[in-house]
Length: 252
Image (cartoon, rainbow, N blue to C red):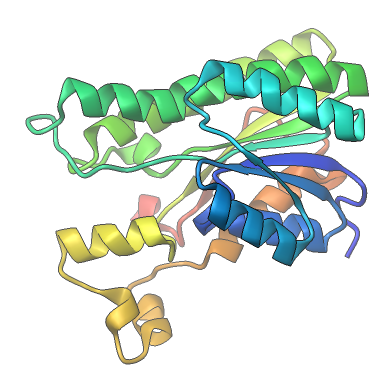
């Protein structure tokens, strides 16, 4: 129960879905988690329930990163981990994607991950090292036609992660950077996609758990356990890796 004991870890997009699962698992394993999210009401309520700290943040706003890291430094005096998790997944193919949608997806995924990593490294250098986990997707590995911008952004995160990992190793910073690539996981985002694309309302099913398993859909904790491993000292020799959590979907 102490795999990340006393580590200070920031998780973005933490009011629901994967970020919330990450927060619950990391807190259970002894971390001091700082949750950030654009939804202050849900975020604060979850933080109080879990025993975490909450800061309102729009990750696509560059100045928000300096504010969050300054607050973390002020409260804890260190940063040991960052999970760049916040994201959106509008359904739109290459023919349907507008410039507005494209830029919003890139801002929340690529820009935010860039700013997050950059600001985290500054604080982690003062702390003597740390671990960054960037949430990508299997869309970065195979491409999803209904998710043009999302696939492109997640592919960019995959490459960015490797560049950051090599830089930190070369410079001897003691900072690791890895990406996690979930497949279909039972989150509000996936539920919406299933309903829109294939007409399956998972939460309306008589036995949603049985339906989820039959469809090969994982649980948020399946991803959170991978995040936990990457933030713990158990993965001290792992950097620049792409950790796929998809029940084999990308190898079929």
